Image 1 (tube, rainbow, N blue to C red):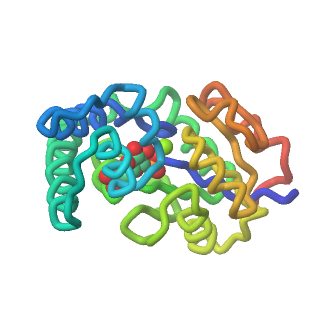
Image 2 (spheres, rainbow, N blue to C red):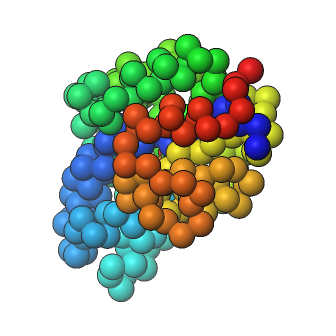
Length: 218
Ligand code: B16
Ligand code: MG
């Protein structure tokens, strides 16, 4: 295998915004009288906003029109973005900046592959903007993880084949997406023991060690 690039999922891998997603979905669910909790929130990892809304609404019986759903997604996103606006680098995963700096210095091509349409704001708030050769996010794709579209786009933007890239993911849907696209899938956090993952790590600091096992980068 000739690995030259690393594609990072954003939420749950490089930074932690899960609690903000939770608070924003919880406020909507409370208004609708739906029994939303942290366990349901975990099912939303890597899943697009509209698909997440469908999971939240499936907790109740009531049917809604498309226009009502779009308004609810907008309501959730407005609240979520108000939390992101107050967030800073403290939301980064331990070692994130050091690992990105090391990998960049060693010549690895680096990308973000995220389902989030808020990825640019998250990168700006956490100060990660300058570390990546490219960003593929939820606003550039039509099919969310477990479809491989976002990772295939990231690889294309890096000018690499899937077989030349490692994908680092915290979501089972993300590991499925990476495998469906032909990538080497590394699970972390909730996806550390995901079925199908090619490797599992307990922290970002293990990534440079993992990369060294493969052929030297460009
Ligand atoms: P947004 P990732 C995903 O980001 C989150 O894990 C998931 O919980 C969220 O629903 C999705 O982004 C869409 O986010 O509403 O901001 O567009 O893990 O793929 O970086
Ligand atoms: Mg994630």
